[in-house]
Length: 122
Image (spheres, rainbow, N blue to C red):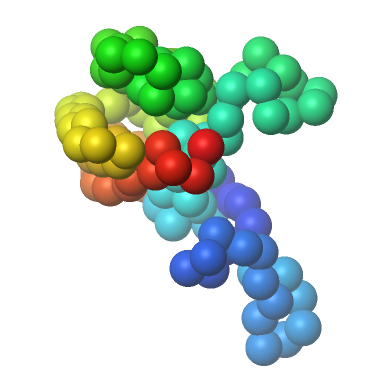
């Protein structure tokens, strides 16, 4: 079963009422792992500089290259433990917002992940 640190609405780790870090499992852990993977920017990880999403390079410089973003997203999501396959991927770019929706088949069942990437924050 997939496990990961739980995050709150601000995407921060948090401590439960028992005084311990929250650990999520099952489909919640898979969803949180996918969202975290999409938010990781290319080049920002000191020990994995080739990892992460090329959001800046693909979307926010010049003409958006949505195909490049989608290919990177498929690659990143495919290595998340518990993900079997992407059933559907939709993206929409408007001004400095990229919205995406993933429909995933996971070891815990089917799930939908909606997210946005704000270009003004990159």
